[in-house]
Image (cartoon, rainbow, N blue to C red; front, side):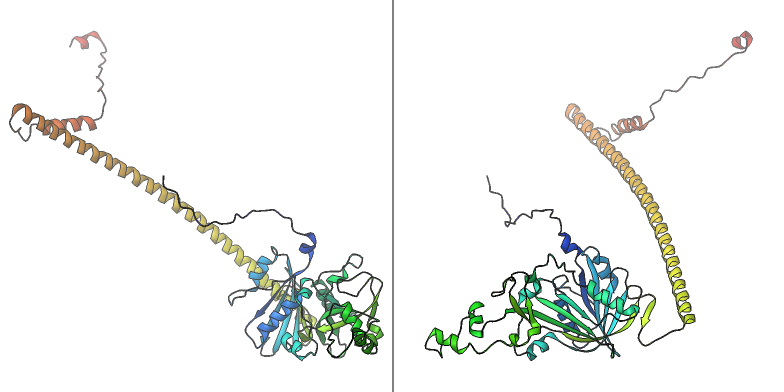
Length: 424
């Protein structure tokens, strides 16, 4: 018995219905995309995705034919709540922040920016590690308590883009980054900064701190280990000079030397990017709708009512066109179904005719076979060739009898009114 060939061994995919974590589902997720191909716009988009990690699509692939509707259609399935769009026009570069799925939309003008690679290369001490991006950053807002609807919208938009923190249950070891936003009331500009947080113990010399933090010291200039400690006793860390950076820890951190109820200093290392933003416009809908605030253009009440009326008319016209399209679509579908039924009936009729012709042909072939068989029998018994019309008549009669209608004619009964007519 031949051995059957077996394909390549494939690991079975075990479908396990794991319920999603409630905290992950409720956390705000974001899409960061760009429109157009301006200068440095692609790299700035990539840097901003890095800021929004881990609750963002870091490897999101965009195509030229993708529209905003394409991203909105999949946002609900992926629990995406916010969208950030970078774009460049002749007037400059802009950033749009939108709340999905129905708005509002905030449009910021980017006056100047610095990419992440430029920020890190300009620092003397660089601190970039992947562990910091496994948790969302801490959001810090300054001077966003001014009057006006736009100030409240900006503050709520920035706060809701990042997960909330419960102070009673938060783990301090997970807070590795922070996003700082400072609003300047005179220039109306917003300074955007992104930092990495480092906590170091206080009250220790540099040499002892190196030992505590498991760093291997350089003992090449020392004759003894004690000499290394005594020489470095007088040099203190730069964080200890500033008392405002000292904090008392409420819990133990994962970094060495930081114990519960101990005093430590907080240091910030900038990660980038840097941006200087200015709010230009607030729209009620998703990238379209009533303009609730504009920094440059101010309209009167009559103009606002006129714009609102024209927008309502466009909306009604759009709904009417959509209804007409739906009706036409239903008519086309019904007509298509009717034509389909007709074609099926025609196909069935054609199939029946084909079967009838096939049956008739088979019967004719059978009769011809019978004629040939009778002629051969006559030759063998009599020893002569039969006449041409000897067996043809019989076969024709058989065919006539086979196809003749099988019924018995009814006898006509004549009714007589009296005996005279019966005798006649």
